[in-house]
Length: 467
Image (tube, rainbow, N blue to C red; front, side):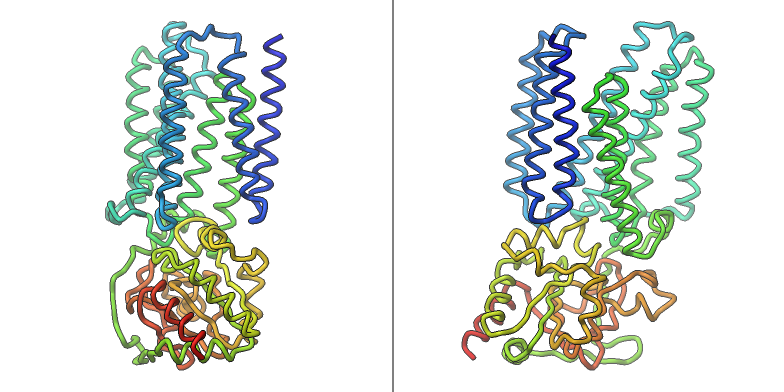
């Protein structure tokens, strides 16, 4: 009887995952979708603990101790994390999923070798264990490296023959794994730990050389790895909900990775090998072509904005760093009271993770219908009076269309240069995350409004109210 109830619970959990994932695709239903998926996971966990009949559970103290500690740590982390640190937290938590899959493989390999002689190990079972070990290890360590790079604790470090080393190491791992599965040598246990160690090393070398501007794609790719590794655990335990959850995460992460690559007009291979972006710190008041920047003060900016008919705000990572989303929303509301039409232009890879700007603006209660995707907003720039670029850089860089030698050449960008007036809010003239100069800053229609985004937007609000 318990088995039938448990299978029903697993069905409910699996359906909840699917519904939740579907709801996550729209900003106005994303929060509810997250709760629906969390409900499915909760019933699946407690159903497994109390209704699973395969093994008699006696270590409830360890189980619930882990659940309580993990729940407390997760809740505190989620409540305390700043929006600018959200990509790091996502990467770190994703790594924990990879670690779980990795450890499951290690535990199940120990069980397998206790139940079978080395030469008689079931090949299918061993294949799933090794896949879970390899993918989980790469996801775990790779996510930790990504967390370090995003938080500034780890820099971009590349060997001269980095890609050759990476490819050679991956082939070596797969070769040893195939030999272990097919031949089943007496040293199988040794080979298992060699594969584990090499997978950890590959996880480090895999992410280390990838440039800063490509990190959103890497986070998405590592997320798909974790899903596939979790699916391996579902196969091992014949657990339907674990299998479905892993497949959903793996497929969704893969699709998101491909969508983001398309948004950057680059192949996944190019992202993994191209290595552009390292957070360059170069600063200059003149372009290579000899152009000069033109500064503007908050007062003149306020006049332009108040008497415009149409304003488009382009949010970027600088908006998140300054935690200026709330005052930006206040500026939007103030302008609309003055009869100005205001929209937000959202680039698919703005920020440091997929959907970063959508989440940031949703936090300040910006209406969802004002968030316009790149392909829909680009035709509107020609009829826009003022574009206000707040902390964005690479996603508005014309070099993507005009400079074949630029590392971002071919990447679709927001066509802000077509607007009548462009105001760029930045702290300084430092290069963006891709580490390259932005010719937009030197164009005649562009004015630079220097300063912290939150402080500058606050001044703009005050100036507009005083007009």
